[in-house]
Structure formats: structure tokens, C-alpha cells
Length: 238
Length: 238
DNA sequence: TAGATTGTTAATCGATTAACAATC
DNA sequence: TAGATTGTTAATCGATTAACAATC
Image 1 (cartoon, rainbow over the protein chains, first blue to last red):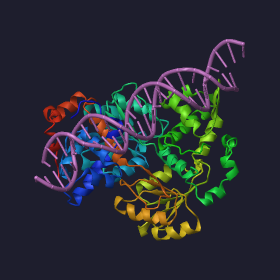
Image 2: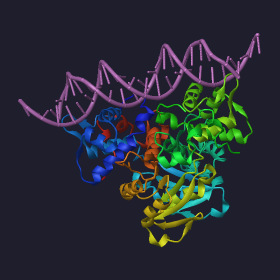
Image 3: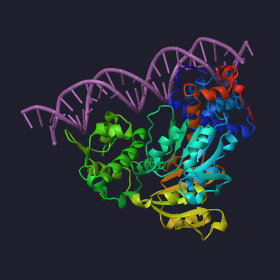
Image 4: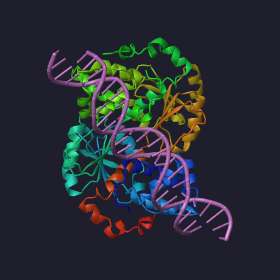
């Protein structure tokens, strides 16, 4: 384990490597070179070798990487088998979709429960996980320390809930609210899934004029589109 | 509109600016400086000024940016009022959560319908949107061109569906399958929402030893944790 | 051994920050 | 006018790519 801080940009690529290794492992492919992995992941082999070197020496010159060995090395780096405990805050449709679809258990993450302020949900279940009232969260966290909070509540409540989760001493927040959340305590790691930002980054790229196809150019007024003066006032809405 | 290609890294920040401007607008704040916006967004003022300059000259020296004007300029850059048409491919829980929660209409995006291979869903609705059989998608796209496809199906079907969507001439794919999707045609823009990568990037950062708190250090074996030789074999599972 | 491929260092490229003239 | 703040250029920083010695 290298001691210098691993850049966030490197960390963000590790799960991708892991996914592809898992697919190879399922196909009973035993070894892979950085070149072959580069082809699959769409990244460069140089980048892959450099990224992996942050976490250890997994390969052999002239051979490549042993799939199972690299996989378990990365799983370890990802904290995959730390048996993290997680809670879901907000028991709406998205929360239900996540606990129903995402293979938390497979990757060693235990969902303890869902929490909501809606009392009518009390005593009901989501994919077998109990739903409790939010007011019970603090007590439950005191009894059983929780590592990860999955925050799938309204944007309005995001800051209040963040403060609560910091009080609860969670170590990471998987943030599905479309707002930036902050904590005065630097102890908590925040990972944002901003649907809004993601969708409109897509729309922006679709919209960029070198991507524009004929029919869109006809739909939007070309002159308006390219006239610099016009832009700020185009489509102004209340 | 600058003619040189806008870096993807810049594009990805624009929706964030927009979100904060929207919040300011709601509070009836009329103007904002790059410094003040920097404080809110957590980005540097220099970066903000440079990013915005890609899309036009929205500010005034000595004054700052007019919130409404900048907002509408960015909305325009994001293609927000292009009246994009969208379809949802895969009508599972995640799809249902998205169409129920995300304010597509507010931002000028029209959801036409959801499509699924499950015939039992035929004729049912999700938040008022009709659910059709996947086999009808091509015809519908031929009749009413679709700009954006929201791909929320199984990983297994991702490549087949991507090919179908390219045939359907969609311009962008919002990809919720946890796999890389490729298209030989370079015409389609792909935006990935990889829950897997996002969650494990979070776990990795929680796991990084300078983030490790006392109790986790006790739970995992310290010696094992820091011994380079041990890492590749730690927690090896089938 | 010869061929292949890693791990790592050096060179290049791109993004961020700093600085400031222009100007509202 | 004086103060403030943009838009833009130059300097710095960091990430990616290229290259290759080490070695399986």
C-alpha cells in the first residue's frame, strides 16, 4: 500500500476495472494484460498500469495480471469485504428501487433498514428491509455503528439530514439529493449522484452545435442560435 | 458562442451553476459575483469565469452576473428548452422512480412513453406515462423522432438495446446499466450513471487508511492491512 | 533463451490558478 | 471618479501518454 494520497481521479476508475475483471472471471478467463484491459475499459494501458501501481504490484512482466488475484486486490482496495453497514434515509421510490436492484449483499454491504418521516410507512418493508421512523435513526446508529448512509430524500431536507448523519457518525454519504451537501466535520466522505447534472450534461452535449443534426437545426432558429447577442435572452422563462 | 470545442470537464459543471442560479432566482436575488458563486458551488471564481466565457459574455465588470440573464444563457447552453423528446427503455422500479420524481416537464423534456419486454406491463401506466412493448419502439421513433433514451434495463440487455437505440436514431443515451455501452456510430452521446462505480468510489474513500477510524482499524486486521504481500490474497472469494 | 509485458520514470498535454488590464 | 469585478492571458500544477529498463 503506497503511503501517498491516492488521487480521487484514480479511485474513481477502480470500480470500473473491478467490473471488467468480474466479467472476465465469470467467463473463466484467467489472465489479462493491461493492453487487453485497456481495450475493454476504453482507457489506456499506461493509465491502467499506473493506476494499479497505487494499490500494489499485481502483475508479472511478460505475463500480465492474474484475474482472480487482481480482482481480490481491488476488492480489498475498494473496501468491498469490510462488511460495511448501511442505512437508507428516505424510503421513496428511488430508495425502493435501489434496495430492490442493487446487489449490496453480494459485495458485503449490509442494509440495516430504511428511515423516513412518513409515519404511514412505519412497520412496512421494502424488499424485506424494515422501514423505521427517522426519529429512531440516532438511537440505532448509537447501538450499531453505521458506515454508509444512502441519502435519497428531498433536496429541501438534505442539509438537515446531513447534519443528522454526521451526528450519527456515518463515514460516508451516498447523496442522491440534487444539492451539494456540506459538513463542517471533515470526517465524512460524500459521493454525489446528481441526476440533474448528469442529464443536463448529456443534453448539453446533444445540444452542442457540432453534435446538432439537421432536424434540430431546423427546430431551433439557426440565426438565433449563433447570434451572440441573442443567447442570453433566448427562451427566458419565469 | 465560441467555435472551439468545449471540454467535457467544463460542460459537466454547467448544470451545477444552473442549479445554484435557480436557487438564487427563487430567493429573488438579482445579481451574483463569481466570488459569491464560487463560495456557494465550492468551485473557484477563476474557474467559473473561465467556464462561463465558453458560452458567452454574461457578466459586467464591477457588477457581476445578472442571475436571470445568466440562468437563461446557461439554460440555452444546456439545451433545456429545446423541447427534447425522451423515452424510457426498461420499465422497472428505477424507471418508475425516475418518471415519478424527476421534473422532466419543468425543464422542457417530454417523456413519450416507457418500453419493456414484459408483456404483462402492456397497457399499464407509470406516473401517467404509457408503457408499451419494446417491439413497438422502432415504429414510434420513426413516427416521432426521439432525442433522449433513458436506459434503465438489465446489464445483460444493454448492448442489444444500445444497438436498437442507435437504429432508432436517438441522439443521447442516459445509461443506468452498470456496463460500458458502445456504438460504432459516433453520432450518439452517452452519459453514464454507474451506481456501482459511484458506490464503490465512496467505499474506497471510506476505506482509504487516512480516512479509517478507530473501530474499522480494529475490525480489519491492521497487520494484514498494511502488509503489501498480504493484500492480493485478502478476502479472496469465489 | 526470446518474446512479452510490467512498473516506473520522463515528456507532453491539459486544466486550474493567479494576475491584471479593461471597464462597468 | 473610485471601487469592484469581469474576461482573458500567463504561470503553475497535475494528469496522461510515451518510452524503456527490469524481468517473468
